[in-house]
Image 1: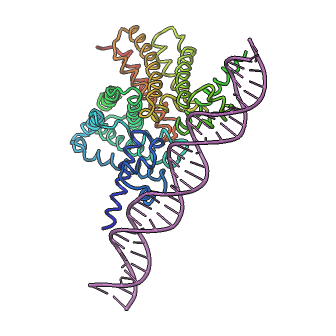
Image 2 (image 1 turned 180 degrees about the vertical axis):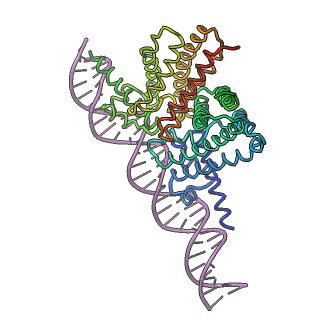
Length: 201
Length: 201
DNA sequence: GGAATAATACCGACCGGTTGGTATGTTGTC
DNA sequence: GACAACATACCAACCGGTCGGTATTATTCC
């Protein structure tokens, strides 16, 4: 199939671009950079994408899917107890940034800072990533609270988790202190755990 | 005095650049943009700063000072009770982003995302802003805990406050939903309040 | 089956606008 | 007349995007 080859170069471009965007950002990564990182010519690039912006849009869409799949196949997803799934999900994200070779950067978070005022399409694509992740996390909280016969503002708690994770990554980029991610997220984990499990109200 | 005039154009450049960097970011704001926003010629620009990067460095230093002064002169700073000072500080930051014409962006946070891998000097300058703010906030927590005869991990709590604020601003940029700032920060406020006041340990 | 045709995938030189930065000149002040 | 504080014209590098052309595969028609 010719389509396979074409699909592979497209995938190579998206993968290379995602890596570069996460590291140096959307604006600092040039089209030529992306091409050479993907081992692809400039002609091939503009055959598959009609602009740098549309590549970034494809990257964000792919990023969103990838996170979703990663969460689905992670071990916590198959836990029987809803509370275990919730706590496992948080432990998963706390742990995933522990390995030194893991790029401590979220494509959506990095991108949206740079383009929120200038590229509305990308802003919406990045926001879609956030909404998608937040919605799934909210479901985990809702399931856990239902099982524990508790009621919490799961929407705001999910937003808090998202914001703190993005903030922790940003503070890491400034300080290069990897422990800040674990320390901050662990505190939110404990906050959510107590709200979901504690008796009262 | 000639020095006054010169100091004023320098100040105008820093102010205009700070505004632009907060809105569209360091990379997207061009030197010409900054000059016309400041109402200053390009020659004047490069008379006062020898590069765009050094302007950004000056902006970050000025930003750091400005935040410090703003906190010092805010009403919460003169509260008698250390706990009131701490809670007042958090209320201050929650409230300051409520007004619609307030730019919901931190210069240090916006800048560091774009340049953390490419401009080490700016990264350190942005980090200095974070460290400075976090240290002051930690002092507020320490004072409040001492008064309440409690002991908490004030370092991590201060880091959590910083990270969550930065994350909330970032999520706002994606969603344009201003309520996310108040909602997330309020939850951290309550977390810190309970840790500082609650009996136990 | 195979020639003819068409469409897809790709190449890389090139273009024009932009951008950070410079060179040169001018003005006011001590 | 020396020096700070500008102003203006200009430049070279860069960067997103185009263009003419080619190789490879798919489709049509006999």
